[in-house]
Image (cartoon, rainbow, N blue to C red; front, side):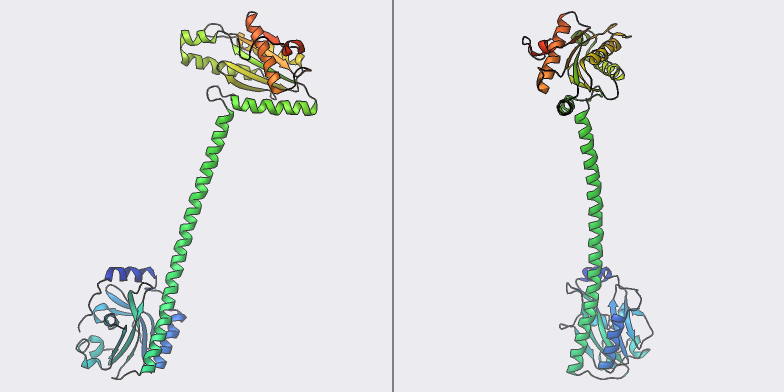
Length: 373
């Protein structure tokens, strides 16, 4: 027997065939019904849905035949691939030199008649054939050929549906993968946003509140105090002679001093109090629901916590504190901070290492700009 020629697009054809996931699958009524109808319409004892693999032809459906596959080199369906209209009819195999000596002709199942229609992939790649076989020479009339083509189209529709199901499954898996990636990216973005939010609220060097967070808290605490008619005190704290620490011992040591001062201040505050680095060597303390007298006691405790030491390089360290509380002359956050800053200036002017509290009179006074030390 002459083996059918290998198609020029064999690699693409085999790829399309294997993507179907049909080879070596269980029988299915959708295909078995078609072979049964083909056998009845063409009055043939055998009908097959054959898929031509690299080395074999495998029968997805078979009617009247026990074998499940044959080698490709004896495949008649593979010869149908060369027919221009996709229909191969062999009325007598013994008279066709392609098949006369085929083991399927001279031996079981003694094929004398073959009629097959090519089954195509959606890309018009030949996958196999729907064929009818008889043990005697014969022909099929035009109506039978038309019916065989119609049944082949139905077999193709089942094949294309299988491919579509696979593509949908692959698309679903790809979407699930993309979804999981988006979830991971979303979670990473949320974590990053949370980290950035924390970084915005926390001073990177000292670990206490940042200037940005302090401004937000000042406005919120002031609003609450005004709304509920509660006392509120604010203290500005400046490390005395801090420039000398940097100049004498270096900036790394200066950073260590800032961290230690922040730690000592925080340890001397109540749980409801708030500490932030206001800039450079200056800190701000907010004392919610705290009148001026109690606020001064807390500020003295803060001053002593720093002064108590021990300190090494430098061997002593102190802070000056300016304190202001909401009063008749304090009508805004800005005026409250200005009053505390003026008090801080007086504390440094009058000898440092002391607490100076603003009064209604002093908080309203002019003289020194904010930040003047």
